[in-house]
Image (cartoon, rainbow over all chains, first blue to last red; front, side, top):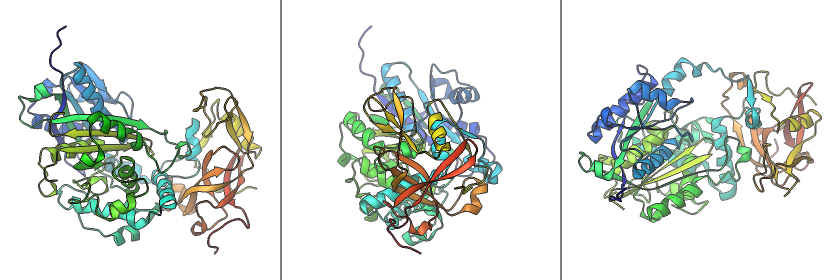
Length: 389
Length: 150
């Protein structure tokens, strides 16, 4: 076997579906729209795809999407790490194309969580039944998903003096960015006062500390630098990636509620990419809740542990700030269909391609997409670059 | 002491090989923590293997049932509709005394939510939910609770 030139993974196309409200589409139809657009963006067709990576909330998910899209891929991945899944799927896809196992991987996400809620979840049902195994140790107490993040927020406030107003600053910054995104679910400017006076969902988190609930999808195409040379878009390089986990879903099993898996995945991903946090021009950080972003900027090393509150307060996340973050408005304002990680990657690529108009970070050359999944349980860091490593 | 703090619609525990002993102790109003007999590391929730030394040998160590609030939240919006009339209620992670740092997520009862603070000293109170099931919740230790009183 001859040793040819090294195969290098790139992202050759990206797209978002319509969002945030798609009552006329099924979950698969959202996938189809995002996939079709990402392939068009890459100058490819479904016939070029030989790998599929996607995940959702039931087993054998990827085979269902493959059938719906009429694909018979030789590479399938449906790794599910919650909200960080799509960073992991792109990491895996990059490894697979570099190893020569596959040439063109379609990574796609679709959800109609908002419309489904109107039909089903919003009836207020749920509860009852039996919680298997260790899950009961968090389920018995009437705690909620927001409540789990609130436990982390309260502990951060206790250890570091972080204030509700500082947390609110995250939501305010995201909303400023969303004002430039015509698709964003919420675009009206808000103030810190608006956030802290919105109703409490799980103290200290208010309604406006929580992401929106949306329908939507997104997709990207992972292939080789060689293949992308003939394609219309400038390729974006996968410079480094890593993921980590601290616990499953029980907050009682999380070693420290103020240290997330990002503290492990970030340094490894940066080392693999040969960069430091100082080299990052723009970030797309999972913002399920305001506290998620404060913890992530600390754990990825953009500021010291405990200083996330003041980092945010001083406009660190905004355009022109230290680390322009979630330039599409993020999950807090633009779109959060449940597992938002794919949107982070799409926006990172658009920044590196210089397509972001009013929210473009000048001369952005290195972007980080970091997904957080479960109950702060998983973190996946993806470092993307405009130039070949 | 019977509180019947939450309605019947709450999920009920389905015990496994590792958790059965914990629930049996709870039914006797004894709070126990799974402890590795090789290296002494405690763990919660219970599991088959010590995450520190990987030993599968363990015993239940009875703990005093006191502890301090590691963190807490006051829930104002319930996910289970039938909990709506219990709002607001307090969910806390309690760091148990003499338990090697093990924490238990539970509720704080007999306290105004506004009076709860991190590091508040608490003690277990048992809620009997049936002949074979009791659930530990926590309340401030009288006289030991710092923070504002209402």
